[in-house]
Length: 142
Image 1 (cartoon, rainbow, N blue to C red):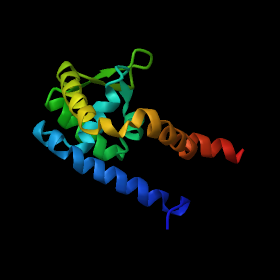
Image 2: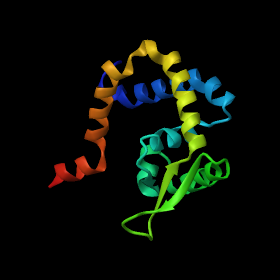
Image 3: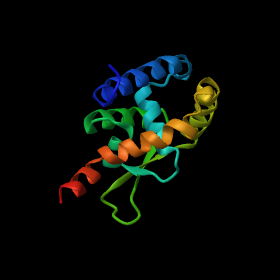
Image 4: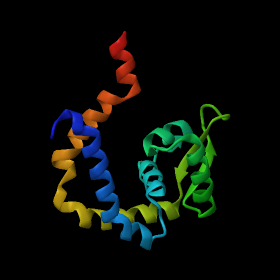
């Protein structure tokens, strides 16, 4: 049976198969899938608060804190106080993290380039993410 009731299964299966396909690239860099999600989220150069990063990387806050601590120790990311509210901390990608992101991104693009996710799949997934986001769900209830 294929249809909307299978959506979670299909997305989970696709994510796990893709993770397996990319595992050797990440393993060679001694980078976990969770660490890669954090590095990728920070690659936009904006720096992110931990709560935002937790959402972007799909990690619970406690797990993210431990992972960011490790990434700081490996000099891949750093923490800095927010310019507006010094009590809040932003996490940024360090130079070493940027180099890791560039290297791994190139290898991933070469490995999955035939899937052309940016042209066909990415817009559909972005639409689904927006529709499922708490902001959208809350706004729909009003």
